[in-house]
Image 1: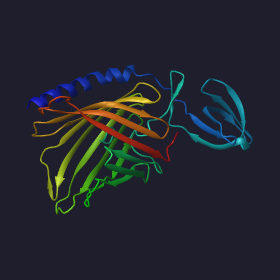
Image 2: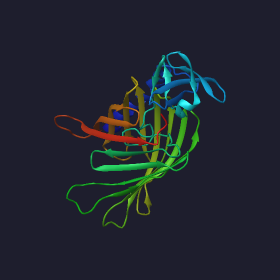
Image 3: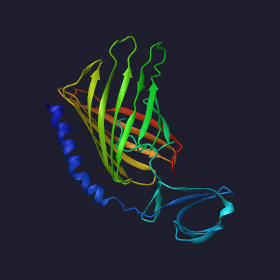
Image 4: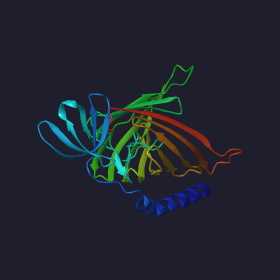
Length: 289
């Protein structure tokens, strides 16, 4: 029970201080931000003031008002980026996941990502609709003729801007085993691009047997800049001496995100360095800028 108490205190403190972090996070403007790509390859970010058949009156992020002829526009799209303290903060391209656990957020229709966790576990996900995503992958253990297959469909019926609620399943096909395994889960995320809290609950299963007690997950994200975020992901495992605590950083550009974290099995007798490294990469395709 010692590990459970340690993680309980950690999670309690996280939940206690996160509302302060959410309120203290930099404010972002709510005006619709557009990304306009011109035929010469240049890109403008800002708001549309007015438009007619031939041109657009445009105000850039730096408050410069210009007229853009429509025949010079190659692409115009609503941006998922936000203006924070007068600067553009891009959207996290891997915002639908913490290190490994999903957040409550949804992939939009046509969006997707390819990711690799701990080198050996590639994963691909695609938004079929704005509320349904299909995902899966195959392990790549060197020299092994038997690999794990996994599927992970996810639905997000509630999307309210600052709160998203999802449900899904991770189904793992185990080689040469009649009983495959996985977890049914529900997960909710509250917050903004600057700071958010994720709470999840799942029931593991093996074959036709489903666990009597749920596993709980608590995670958080806190942006420090346009391209860096702090992440923590933590697991309550019922009837276990060991609980999982992790924290680390995410570095990202418009489409690529790289995670480096440290995982500690609370309750385990560890000698020397008490953490296991976590490395993950994700490339987002079809993303809204």
